[in-house]
Length: 183
Length: 86
Image (cartoon, rainbow over all chains, first blue to last red; front, side, top):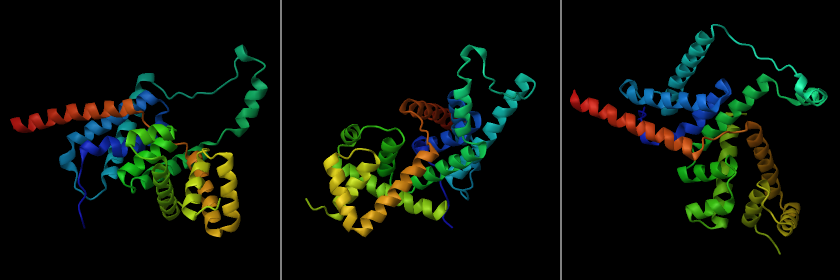
């Protein structure tokens, strides 16, 4: 079997979004998530010699990330002394809003739905990895960051119809990959 | 006026990102009416958009990524310096 190699210069471009989506749902705070991700990259660098090349680079980084998230939970809990349960009681300041709040609550997804959607998101990002880098970057810029077609065309120096061909190919590949791996 | 399938494909994508003009929309609809293959693609592509929306993907900002890269670079030079010493 071919061995996997580590390529730290490519980590950020390849995995940052994936790690971010994985982390944000678990810690719910952008800054904390970013800290954990940098810790993960640094820990990865420092233990590169332990990488045996059996797992994929992504799987290996995720296993480090998981440990970092657990560390974070521990630190967080010990500093507070106890686990905290947050509940949203309607407060009196915005009385009168409560009815709308309740109605809105009904449409809020359950935790399981959210988890499932997050997994779907990770599956999508994993599938995007199989595209070539330029395709994947352009697709992400358009679909996730919502950047204007014109701005992307300028940055990559491509024509609009070129751009749409890239989007088209990316979406076909993505659909195929998702069909295989998710459904 | 008549659209080829590859032109229709382009319009399908534009439609998903809400970038079709009314004129293009009509052309596309007309093409889809006669072309089974493109119609299937159009519908599947719509479903894909639904999934993408559901997944609600987040991305790191450019700045955040640059920060990560900077940290990796620093650490990397430290690690290689230490290796040289040993």
